[in-house]
Length: 345
Ligand code: KG4
Ligand code: ZN
Image 1 (cartoon, protein in one colour):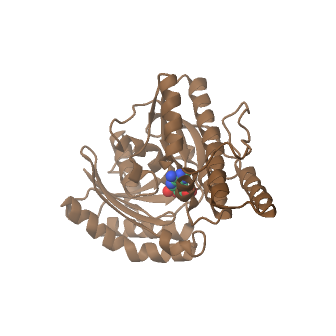
Image 2 (cartoon, helix red, strand yellow; image 1 turned 45 degrees about the vertical axis):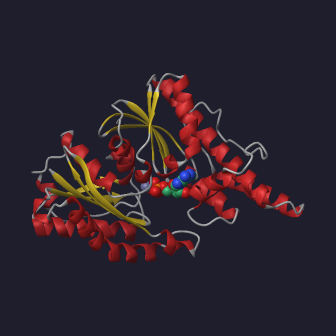
Image 3 (spheres, protein in one colour; image 1 turned 135 degrees about the horizontal axis):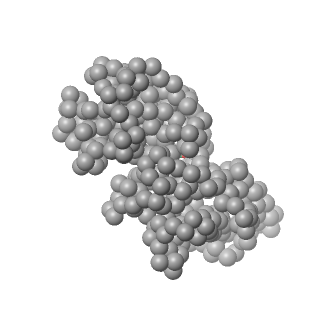
């Protein structure tokens, strides 16, 4: 069964074709990073307009790549939230219109469920149950996952997300948007021990996080360096390494703590920050010590993409959570949900 999936919740337009048995057939992506760079962050109105421009050509590209025609598609999936309202409306309306015109079921997918299940697109794929560390630009959560649709929130950030902490620190350091990958690159030349940055809630008894204090510490450090005329390239690299170390330390230790508390041996990391090599190395080393396993999505599917959306719909169908004959999937009336709790899916 072929599922065509659409993603437009933020600054990436993603389209993909997934087969319920054969897996990912083709996917195409357009990133708006170059467009938003000049503004230092995502401009929602520009994002929506660009999604509109990209979505149809990307769809043609995917179908052509897969050698599959629209007539062969069995269901249409799209991100219904969370995300930017106007941006979400693009994938939602295109998917619903396409489904209506082809008389196909239209499936609303939760963006974070897409991220959460994306490590199952890699080889080897983790089996259930596992602990998931979901680290994106907008969310930081630890979940216990017992199966598709069985998600229990163990902890989450009380303020900034981990990706946001990377991005805001990077911005203060004058790095381009989105700063996570730029900061990580600069950190390669830095000494992570030079600046002692806060690791809030590291020793709290729960699995919650707080990252908002980090940007204040980064700002204070920059001001001090400026005042003593010591803000050179090496200082910036050392600061980048220290920021990365602080974020990786908190994420890594809390994730391990959640594994120990649940008694599970498998950890799955998903979302844009899952692309961070330092986090990957730290968790690989820790899990080896604990005789457990850690799984990541394929590197190119860590950040937003259409593949994870089509794939999440396919997993729900396979798990029997979606009945394609359900008339509710053929009303072609819809709303998007800029705020949406994953445990409510
Ligand atoms: O999952 P994602 O594409 O978007 C959301 O759904 O939010 O994640 C984007 C986030 C950004 O904050 C970006 O800076 C961060 O992932 N990111 C990284 C790296 N690559 C992307 N953070 C740290 N290291 C990286 N290599
Ligand atoms: Zn995302």
